Image (cartoon, rainbow, N blue to C red; front, side, top):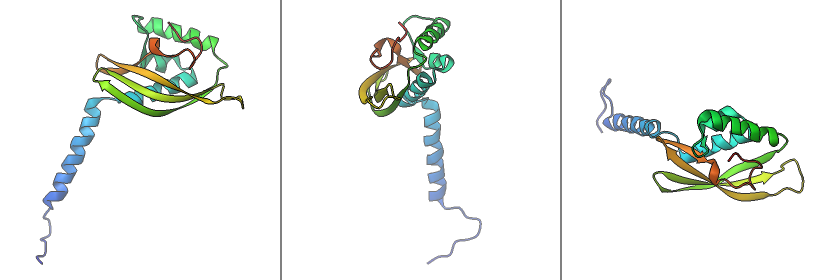
Length: 146
């Protein structure tokens, strides 16, 4: 066996470090995943946060100000609605569309409530994933904006 000299670097270590940096860079350049955006949207929906939910969704041709006003109206109407949710899967049929599968337990404060399966449609708009509110089921959340 040959002894290593002090100060020499193993090329395999350097190559591995470079690969880690390249992979990390791809995650930052590629932007957020559809699942990440869907999770942020659902958290904002549960917290009834009009600022955050407006950033992660679109409602047809509404401007951000109109969408925010619509969400405020929705939250006023459903201020006592409590639900639990979790992501069960996702798929991306093409580069502009994705579907995140959820299980939502509406009226979570009731012992009679149970989880139901829903799909959350996302579209890539200006390079960012956004939840398409028009495609959401009204069974999932009451009084969704139109």
